[in-house]
Image (cartoon, rainbow, N blue to C red):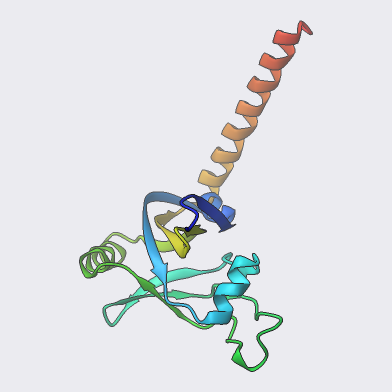
Length: 157
C-alpha cells in the first residue's frame, strides 16, 4: 500500500521573493528512471527554472536534477527540458495568460503525492525592487511585534 501523504522534496523559496504568485497549479513530470531516484534523494535545484508552452506542450526549463550516482550509462542530462503533464484546457488557459497579461510560470514546489512526483507551478508576475523592499520591511516589522509580544508575556516590559 502506498503512502497517502504529501512529502515535499524541494521548494523554490526564491520564487516568493522575486514574484507575486497569483495562482498555483499541479502538474506531473515526464521523467527518466534515474531522474526519479535523484529527485527522491533530494538532488534537485529549481532556482532559475521556468515553464513555457511550446507546440501545445508545457515544458519546464533549467531545472537541475543531478545525475544519479549509481546510474552509470543510464544517466540523463541534468538540465534537459522536461515535459509537464496537465490537461489540454489548462495548458491553453496558461498559454493565454502568459502571452497577454505578462505572467510567467515558475515552479514553487516539488513533492511526492501517492507515489508520484508532482510539481506545483505558480502563475507569477515579477516584483520590482521597491516591492521586495516593502516585503522585507513588513516581515521585519512583524518579527519585532512578535518579539515584543513574547517579551510582554514573559513580563520583561
